[in-house]
Length: 319
Image (cartoon, rainbow, N blue to C red; front, side, top):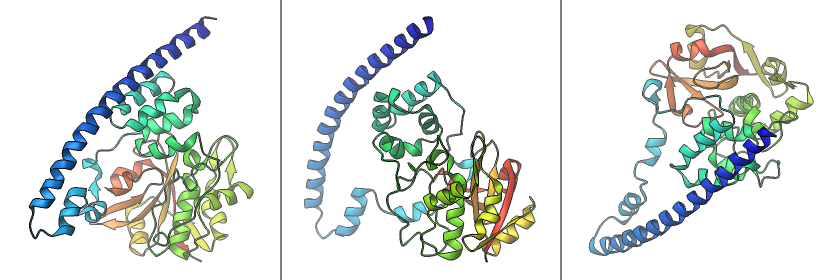
């Protein structure tokens, strides 16, 4: 009885907090609209007043696109990266973390307004990885099916960065209670490797996840079993070979263009277990495709930074 009463009190407080946030949003919206109007008028006058200006450059400058492509290709050292560390959260810890995030993006406020409708696992993952916001925003209205395949750019060569919570496949169930977004890091990593080595556009993360489920490479309570990296990979025409955790061995495989999938323990990438792809080297440091984080995939990692977190690893070649 006391627990039910406490739950009702928490829910009432959340509703009151939501009403206050809605009011603040309306006020901010009015201010933003007024400020935007001033900017538009000022920008129009600026455009009219610049005689003979390079219109493309002006457009790029106003849109903030100048140098965007170069910026996206820039890596940063792990020690200098501003990353959100994974953290185990439950109950009110999740709610407080979302309240803090709501101050950075209105999308988090919308999540809070429907807080009780979401599975706790989705909200906890979002707190540890704010990049998941677009996925979380669409979760409640999703049909749990895959929509769309790989793009031409993703199959054109190199190792594509595929994200497990991509809306194209993230909502697809993986395991009896989970989905690819939360549990599908292994099939997503294997998909990246298969596409890179074979250009097989059909080997999407959801297709590899379905294969894993059908062939027994997913165990409830455990997740994706390691044998998918060797036995399972052969189905797609690639050879996965378990290798030793040695800096020289890893660098040699990467320099030969052989991607490496790592099973990771708690640390920079996860609080429990996770899979990532080592894709190459830059100035002696390792580049990574993290299927759960574009931000971590733009970071250069030293061997000493990631080695203590690696539980096992496999190098891949085309069969």
